[in-house]
Length: 260
Image 1 (spheres, one colour):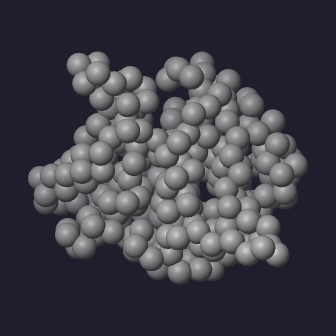
Image 2 (cartoon, helix red, strand yellow):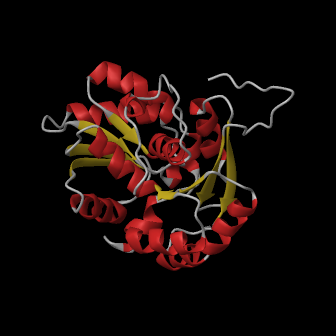
Image 3 (cartoon, rainbow, N blue to C red):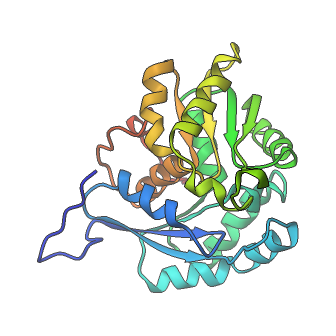
């Protein structure tokens, strides 16, 4: 949506949403945020400096979460979202609650995770049997499938768009430059080949996704949840911003209710 600015107001006069990214480079996160952002809502970003997809780096990143939260608290944000499902999922079911409690002991700013927002989004839309499109490998697919299974969501088919070396792109970051047609057709084909599915989950916020959600929902008649969409939904809800976000999926027709 078109951005607007008033000479007499700060850019984030309505809400400033803190966003903790895994990697230092994050071009798509900011861009997709502003595609969806209501007037007066801005993003404040910091990084956990993940440069390699290893468990040690994930663990190190989580250990820096307190520093990232403190940075965003200094920037006076209204809510904080942690991006990157592997950081939580690789630590197993139950770790998210530990992290939420740890952050709550540090700040009163409401906080949510990528995986938590996705799960709550799928619950809000009644999604129980989903196809999952990601930029991850099969090992991560297994961990994601097991993790959301604890939340009553069955992943019935998966597909990865992780680029191969033969494509001439970095295996780690090549997904950030995929043309939108690739995730659109991959998600569509995956869903159509899985008759038992009741929705589509696109995770991995580095991969472009939000601009295809509305088309997928119109063409297939089923709900779609993506990481960046779900994190925006959660960020707005935690900041107590109620605004129409049109063109980015049915999820925004539902109210995100902060945890009591």
